[in-house]
Length: 109
Length: 115
Image 1 (cartoon, rainbow over the protein chains, first blue to last red):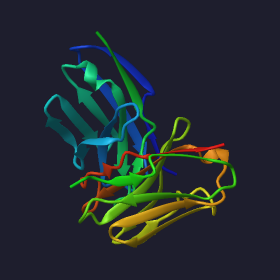
Image 2 (image 1 turned 45 degrees about the vertical axis):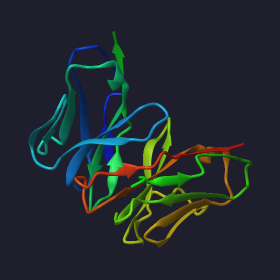
Image 3 (image 1 turned 60 degrees about the horizontal axis):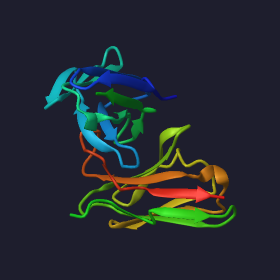
Image 4 (image 1 turned 90 degrees about the vertical axis):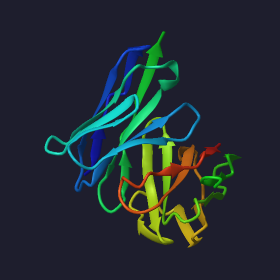
């Protein structure tokens, strides 16, 4: 079977840093992606990791450890507009993209 | 480019009726995906195509669901007959190339309500 685990909800304060974890168990693995989805909207791509290590894109960074089947999304300098759901997704075989259940991030002023 | 275009945006129908959802991918993209999103089950991959050919339909819940891609610019997802448990948001996404590095571009979704 294939599964991706991530926390269902996370709450943080504006201006702070938050980390959203994702562990996966899949029959194959090519890479880990992260997507953001605002309420009522469509998921939008944030980042992709195929190799171990940290990828940084502005205020967002994503990390992957293939040996631990683990990754995380790090959001810095949180803004109210970052309130959304965040999904990790695994490319398990030749573009078969499987999504986790999502983490709802709530940001307090 | 206008992005991935889905229609209808909203559909309300009665149990037993046929439902057809439509998708126009981004021009030049060779992968097309259909996902279903519900609170209980999250984003489920139903089926995906490469160059108009279905690659994996293992996520299609049952025979009531069918999907086609007659050409590179059009795909349909059909539910016949529909049931209340099919109520969900159905997303179409397209991408260029293989693997997760090929960013998925999602349409705005079709919200289906089956009464």
